[in-house]
Length: 104
Image 1 (spheres, rainbow, N blue to C red):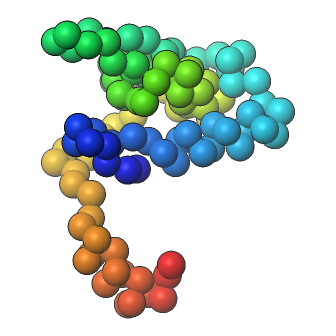
Image 2 (image 1 turned 120 degrees about the horizontal axis):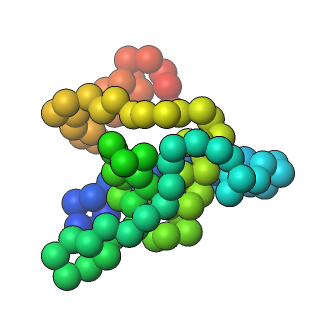
Image 3 (image 1 turned 135 degrees about the vertical axis):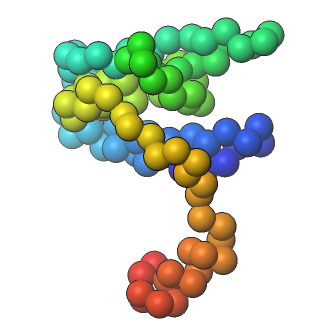
């Protein structure tokens, strides 16, 4: 995920997976399931979201909302169970992990 200028995280991995599925011939729009793209009114703006009526994921635009909803449906994901108080690692933690594990 990457941080946007408004301190929101975009599910960039989900965007990439959806693009790979589409380019592989998967019709994400036809995938049955609980997830759908929607617009959420927040103060004076409309936010594109992916929702299953229990969870809402804010995404970059409505086209990406359609893709992520289709991806979650195609993968058979009915619900997400977020980890409470989850914070992304800071860059120094990522570098330390790479040094310790040799991962890149």
